Length: 107
Image: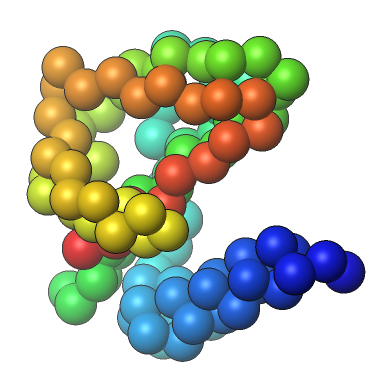
């Protein structure tokens, strides 16, 4: 495992511990798939409870993808977990994802 992998896992484990929507079993929240315009290449979901919310988007292809979403469940103001950039997502939002790229938005 290289240092980039260790960094990624360390960040993800810290997020899972801090964000109650990601907790296991009855303590966490159910994953709800968010339909998008590229279902064969991009996977997106929301997990939320009374305290926390996460919206995650993954490009499982070797091509640049520009994705739009078909539900309102993801709307809101977030912080992108890895870059710490603030973002507001709404109906007109489009995300550009590089090959194998991902975004994890937290509230």
